Length: 286
Image 1 (cartoon, rainbow, N blue to C red):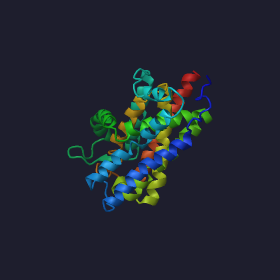
Image 2 (image 1 turned 90 degrees about the vertical axis):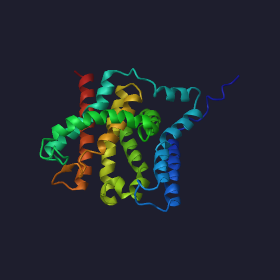
Image 3 (image 1 turned 60 degrees about the vertical axis):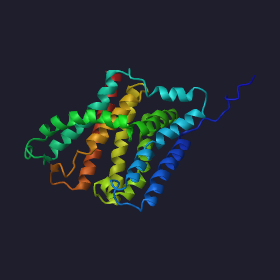
Image 4 (image 1 turned 60 degrees about the horizontal axis):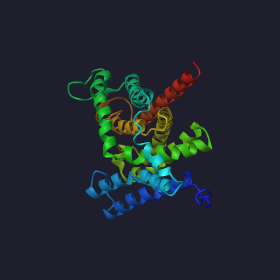
């Protein structure tokens, strides 16, 4: 008997991107219109629930396309979520470079803590107390699924390996970074507090650069972990947790504007990616 699955077209990257955008944007925009076009995402509970549900768009799209692909594709995709044994280097790459880059930039750029009892103290003191908590908060954020669990099954679990088949790591990371950033477009356009009050026209390019940098970091973590999604999910949770305190004007005093703070976040992501690429190259060519 002939194998009817042999000639079946394998859903590609474009199909994934279109389905992901359709799923997430329809949930976000429809709920935003139905709830009276709120200006803050902390407003109606339905809007918060919609943002949470829409964050699973990439993962749902990946699951659907894997299920209709070649036999065993869905099982192969699911295996990435339970591959804990992926080497200590993958976990180190996920948990150390980005927080350390934030710390170095905070010190170098003259940010000083506002918190009571720490005002005027070295930023290192705040980071030594807050960042370890943030790392574990990254675990909690990942388990909750808002972002890390819902997205990583799509961006890294499905899209990255397919783009790597078509080109190199740099090209794949760049494409994912752009798609990943623009996927957030409705939320950043609708809610000024989501972009910390930074004007949309300034926030979009700065945010896109930051997400592209994080995409390079995530790709390196995924490759180091041999396809495991565990360190990627943890890193995504860590970024969500730490991103809320890094360069935040309510926590830090500085001469920098909120727009500059968004740019500093992008620089930290770029520094992390550069370090991981250098480390990988040094390992291959001692």
